Length: 273
Image (cartoon, rainbow, N blue to C red):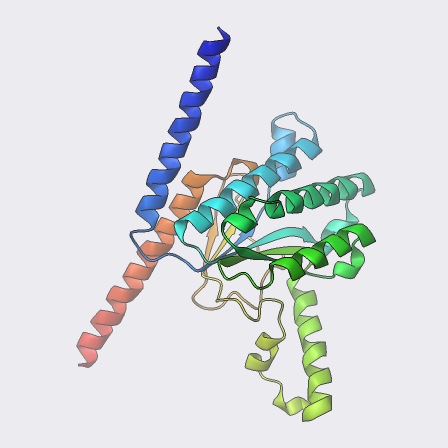
């Protein structure tokens, strides 16, 4: 019986691997977004709906993140930004905050261990936010990892922790003003200047922003970076449920929109010509 159960599990694993490979091959036939951002919403609601502890919901969400990020890089995506912990999340119960920080620390170790995702894809890890609000051990770990991976050119993973977009904008403005006082006047501060002081200054534009759990709001995430061409997609699945199928649909929707934009540009060029 044990062998039969083991064989069934192996078959399911092979089936999932084959499905992922097929989906990724289809994605790579078209244009691929270079930068995808995720608001990973729904861990607590998933846990409540399935009668499991909140901590388990967050753990499953961490597993989903690893799987989704790996699938993104396999698909040809250059960079991924995830909303891991908002400044507003510090209002949650202390026990839950400790659990989340311990889980984040574990996930960082897993991403960066020898042979881990970061090494396999040669990606840099960046942690964006008010790191001084984190405990000393975690802060030291994150800063060391950022130093160790900063010269990698295979791609990037941005983890937004102790972050809100408004705080990022205020921080960028403060840095720009200080720089202007040293050089010129505050009249020299433009949107291009502020962009250079954002946490994501060196990253390609956000092509797609995905929010799970069906909630239609940005929750103070990447407000500056979401420009007129950013494709914002709301997905009904809770984050622990989000997998290759959902990612496949997200990217295919984006590809279709790019085709429509291209056809519209051609039509406009023909009419003007």
